[in-house]
Length: 110
Image (cartoon, rainbow, N blue to C red; front, side):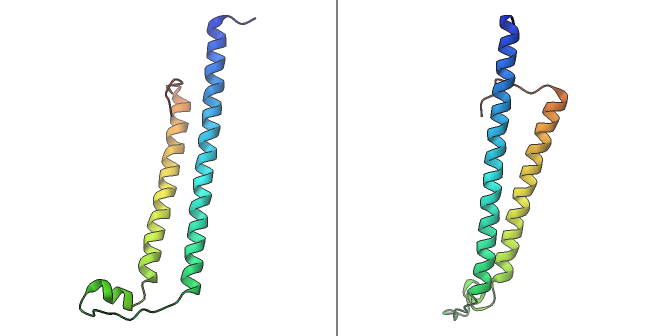
């Protein structure tokens, strides 16, 4: 038989494991959604090569609509994807650091 303190420790460890599993599932789901959105936007750029005439040629926004905006969209998408990847790597690094130092708080809510 375990004493009360050992049982509490085991319950906290199991709760932490379940929380980490749930966080991983959420991260994977968001990553998959990001990849799907990226794929859909790339496909939309390939299939919808429509040029809108500039209604007001003196305005910068209208000029962008008149010219190819695919480059601007791709730069924005690549910046977003890079930010998502960096965020995921930072979260994983923080989790590994907490795990290695043993200073992780088990009672910390999500």
